[in-house]
Length: 393
Image (cartoon, rainbow, N blue to C red; front, top):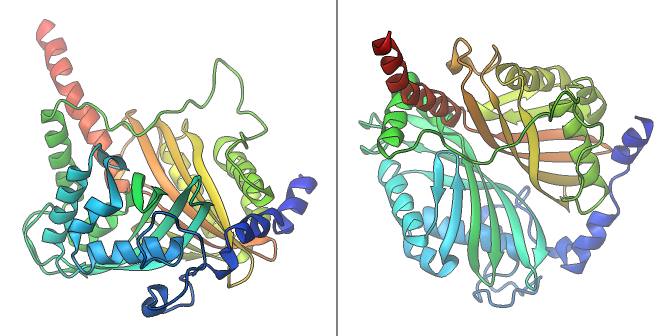
C-alpha cells in the first residue's frame, strides 16, 4: 500500500515528457481561458495537424471550435466534413453507425433546445496526427425547453447538465465517439415524471425488437474466486494513469472504500450526476457506496485512460469506464426503488485533477435515466413470458 501511495504522491514525469512531444505545454487549456481565446484568430499552430482544416491550431482548439460551430452556431452540415461516413457513436440509449444518423440526432436535439449553449469545461487528450488523437471533452450545457421535442410538450423550464464526449480523430474527422449525457438531470429539472418517461422510452425500444441496451458487458468473478488484487494496467501510458487504474480497481471491484481517503484530498470537490456539487472524502465515499449498493455484483471496467499536465498545477486524468451488474440492492439511485434483479449497464466518464499528490476535483458523468430505462425494458420484455406462465397454470 505504501508503494501505491508514494507513486500517487509523485506526479508522473512521463506525462509531461509525452506531452512535450506534441507541444502540449503550448496546447490550449479551457480552465482559465475565455471562449474567444479558445478559438483564436491568427494564432500559429502549436501542434502538427496534418490533414486538419487550416483554422485549427491544436487538438483542443479543434474539438472546442468544431463542437461550438455545430451545436451553438448551428452549422450542423460541418458533421459531413468532421465525421466519417461510417462513424460509430456509442450513447447511453443506444449506438449510431453512420454519419446521417448523427446529423439527424443533432437536429432533433436542437429542435428541443433552440436556446441551448454548451460551454467547454475541460479537454483531456493524447495522441498525434500520425497515430490519431483521442480527446475527452467535458461540456456544461444550459438552456430552456422551449419547443416540443423528445421530452414531450415544451414548458419553458431552464436546465443545466453535464456531458462528456470522448472522440477518436484522424485528419479532421471523428471516426468513433462515446457520449455520456446526464439526461436524468435534464428530465428532473424539466419537471417530468421520470418513471413514466423511462417506460415510454422502454416501450419504444421494445417495439424496435430490443430487449436490452447493450453498451458492453463484463463479469465480476469467474467461479468462486475473489476479485484480482492487481488491476489490468495495459491501457495506461504513464505512472499516474497506472495508479489511477489501480485505486479505481481497489475501490470499485475490491470494495476497499477506505482507499478514497488515501487518494482524495480532504477538501476535494465532487461534481457528479444530477448536477451534484459535494465536498470532502466522506461525500465521495457515500456516492461510490450508493452506486455499488444498487448494483452490488457489478464489475467496474476502464476502457480508456489519458492525461495532461494542467495549467492550474498537477495533472488531469480522464477515464472512460463501463459497469455491468444487477439491481440487487438499495443504494443511491433513488429512481430504482425496490430491487428488481434486472441487469444494468452503466457507461461513465470521469475526470480527475491531481494536485500535490491527491485528487482535488472529480467530474463524473453517467446517466441514471439510461439505467432506469434498462430496468423498465427488462420488465416489459418479461411480461409476455409471465402471462404465458400464468395461462399455463
